[in-house]
Amino acid sequence: MFGFFACLRAGFLHGDAAVYAYQIETRDFGERTLHLLYYLVGWVVVRATAPFGLPLDTTLILLSGLLMTVALALSWHLYRALGEDSRTSAWALFVLLFAGVVIQQGTEAEVYALQLALSVAAYLAYVKERPVWAGVFLGLATLTTPLGVLIVGFFVAETIRTRRFKPFLVLGVVGSLVFLSVLALVWRDYFFGTRGLLVDSNIVQTSAELFPAPARGASSSRGSAIDCTSARLAAPA
Image 1 (cartoon, rainbow, N blue to C red):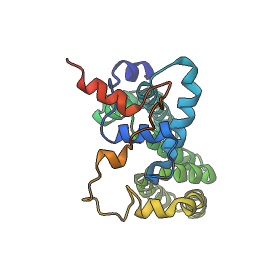
Image 2 (tube, one colour; image 1 turned 60 degrees about the horizontal axis):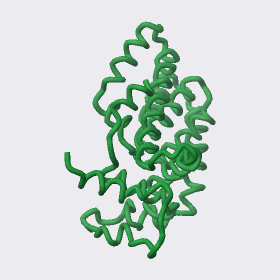
Image 3 (cartoon, helix red, strand yellow; image 1 turned 30 degrees about the vertical axis):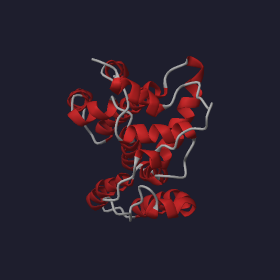
Image 4 (cartoon, rainbow, N blue to C red; image 1 turned 135 degrees about the vertical axis):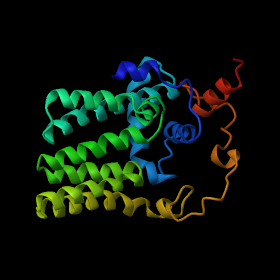
């Protein structure tokens, strides 16, 4: 599956992906902290793959493909944990693989492949009666993007179905501790920063505000994500 995503991967970063890549490259983890975990994971992967000489944009796009592959593999295990046989699980995975959003998020450098992998891991752990791990994965998914919290609805449905409330409470406490322990450090930017939850989305920033000019003579061995993107966009077809 990873080979499938790698072959279809995007040729360059665009939109928010370029902004996130710039923050990863410059180690600017204090802004747009809605996606803090993505920056940290991306930075670790970029550092680990630096000896291979891969461009920053290629590294982050391939990371999405790898994470989406992990998410799909976890989905197969989830189907099995929910009682489906191996054949049905395989067909379900095949259908999921060709879902438009899966292909899109597996071939672009975005936050959602990481969030999906963590969300599926959380639900799988919960179904396997490991609420502590489920809470950890849920907290991490929410640190990747606030949308990660939406999976709580599945936990509520599972709690109602099984009528077991203790695992749900453990999940909630652990997930809250993981998320809030980090939020306590970055709450100001999380709510009121550049991409804060409580900031007016109609406020438009200029590219100069987003990407200040580097010092004269400064350079990066791997190249700026924004420079790389701009060059590819400007290149003739």
